[in-house]
Image (cartoon, rainbow, N blue to C red; front, side):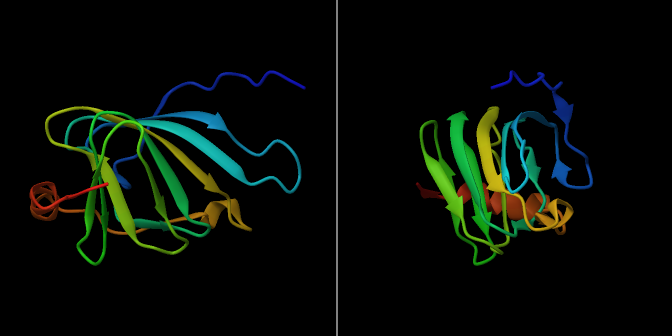
Length: 140
């Protein structure tokens, strides 16, 4: 057993996020063959990811605020603390905070065969699509 060093909070890059988003790494592979990655991610009001997908899918567990999670077919799920959302491998999606409050979630995923390609980043979600999504959500 070993205690892992505490990593500093990092700010996510504007190439992949709109607005202010911070990440605290929690878990990463420690031994050969391990793939699990876990992070606590905090979004300022209206902040969101760009469109993206994950080679092995992703689980989001909402811990604070109101999350909006959108897919290419126009579905947007509104999730609150204690709710968990799963996106399957390869599904293009985005997630972020509602416009009126901060949101925090745990992001859980497995690295791909090449950790650098675990997440495929795409274009930003524009303001018009985000506003439309906020106004047409489905409760989780």
